[in-house]
Image (tube, rainbow over all chains, first blue to last red):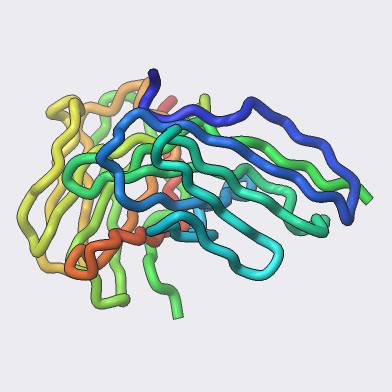
Length: 109
Length: 114
């Protein structure tokens, strides 16, 4: 299994839709996870941190299933401004972050 | 107030040249990182310093040499630049003392080697 694998994109959804991204990871010892978003030609920005079974912040909900080594990100009521690449990021040894390819989301009017 | 800043933002240079990229953070973090994002968009760790001590050194050509004069600064010097070094280089910082390692990224330096 790769260190981190995400749903291939792109996801094209209308405004107001609910969309979910999935991510699997290989390191069963990982205790925390991060979701970052990256806009085109910009730096990754921390969206959510997940330290237990999940986290919710407004329209965004992250869930962690340690048994299956699977985490998800749910976005409700999508906005045009949510269009970006979403990166599932488990930490690796020494504190480095392991970035996958990311999932591209495009929200259309 | 820029939390993590990098200079320059763009760098165009010829093969064989030597160049440096600088990074500064004003978040009070104790750990800083260099990541490389290539044309395929994968972000990969290169180096990490914790309190000026090198703690991560991935498989990177020794033409790349990081230097951390203090906790708030991490520079990257690249010797004998090659075409394959063209990429976006991101600096990041975190506070490892909290144990959560949330990392905050600078705006990136887009390096083009011709």
